[in-house]
Amino acid sequence: MTTANYALIVSLFSLFASLAGFVWNVWSKFIYPKAKIRSNVAVMLIMDGDGTPPRKFVQLSATNYGPTEITLRSHQARRRQGFLWFRRNCQLAFVNSVAHPDSGEPAGWIAPDFPKKLAVGESATVYFSAQSPKRWIEEGDLYYFGFTDTFGRLHWCSRANAKKFRQDVIKNFGAIEPTRPGLLDATKAGAVRFWHKVATGARV
View 1 (cartoon, helix red, strand yellow):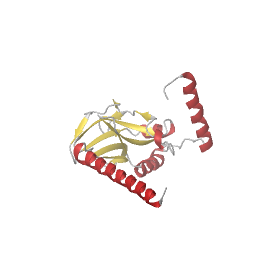
View 2 (cartoon, rainbow, N blue to C red):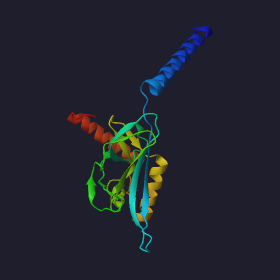
View 3 (cartoon, rainbow, N blue to C red):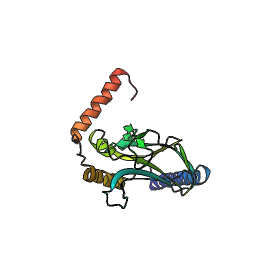
View 4 (cartoon, rainbow, N blue to C red):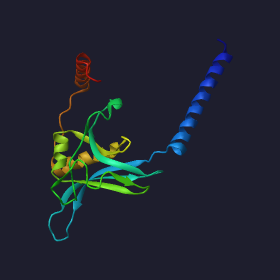
């Protein structure tokens, strides 16, 4: 092949890439725009102002940044997956909420008033008791918290937010980080589980 042929191939590839990008932008912004949800989890305090010690609780919130409204179905949590980005939503968990910050009675896996429709600029909040976070880390090793919408999309808090929340739970609730296997051990365990599924005919 000559230099001209290579140049033609590169030009055609660039044309198709530009066309695909243009079609995707039109589709995502004008034909089928998706609302952007920002989730945030934090340890909060209730201060009565009467000299009693402040009480702690956990708040998980979501804000709709637009450009369309969205309906959030429920809150969820998941473990940290590390480098296995393609399996980032494989280990999901439901966590019990409470009806209001000062309540110790579980409200269930689906928080009150959910599913909840959010217009652009509106927020939704879910509360958890102070007894929950320590178990989340020590027993479940949960790391990311967020919401799922009615289309099945998951909206997690950012990595920075998840890291800070975990540090706050360790500091405020005395949680102990679970021992994690090394990279080689984790890879071996994953391979064993995969081949076990293949051997038993389970869905991979």
